[in-house]
Length: 394
Image (cartoon, one colour):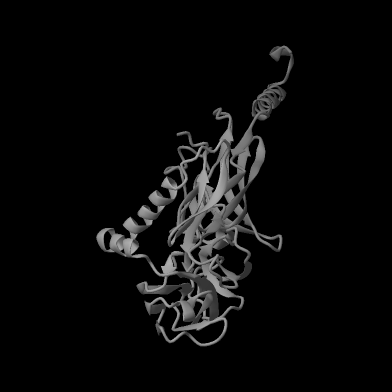
């Protein structure tokens, strides 16, 4: 178009339209860059990132506005920046524009938030009013987490064999509510409760592990595992159970070598229980104890072994604690009196030397060759034993 063929006023109008079209074309690539999902921690700080791209000088930002969407669908203003009026922030003590001088960098509208609260969680809208491209915006979702603190402890059950609480795990002040699991191979039951935490919007979760006390579960470790979005890994709390159980009884002291006239022997009632037994009762399968015995708590004392009153007698020990009783029994076989040679060995070598002497005599009495392994009963005076002969060659 030739300028000389147009009136001056029409030419100026045409020039302005041309410049406007050029500016609109250049502004067509303008967009808002934002991190759409942001996570913050209660009482800590976070940043809502929002900026305008590209940054050609042809784009003029006339206003920046931050809005928060309410649950009822309405919106509330969080912060506004106007090139002439400056910033206007609803809560300036906790919220501020990240760019210290927004008038110099009006395309960076990132918002810094400190001392986060549960009510800060929600969807925010970052909006740019620009010339000549108009309004541009982006939505950002802010999630506020609270790290819970966890404690676990073993409980002291009552002395009864009933289902009862034996361990407790408490995770306090989490947002959202923490998840609790028990890691154990014990057959227990779990009861969980949830209540408001110490700060608004937080939760406290309590999990209790219950079982029937037993000796198999006493002393075992169980672990409380707490999972939460704010954790990089689960929080593990291990406790050791201390459980009551009734006596489990065994009897020791009989060495299969009670002979007539042996002195100062005893049976011991070994009771494993929690708490320890308070009562021990000794008896026999036929009734009362022989006169040659004396019950002394967990021990049954025998001054002298007697054939008439003790041979083939079954002794019974019954132990009792607050949870119940347990018992066991053992049958005593009495052999004949020792010979004078055996008595001399006992005096000289003690019981162990006498037993070894019996073994030597029994082996010496059987020096014949045996071609295959077999068991034979060997007797030499008062020494009696079962010996395994494995291909002995003279």
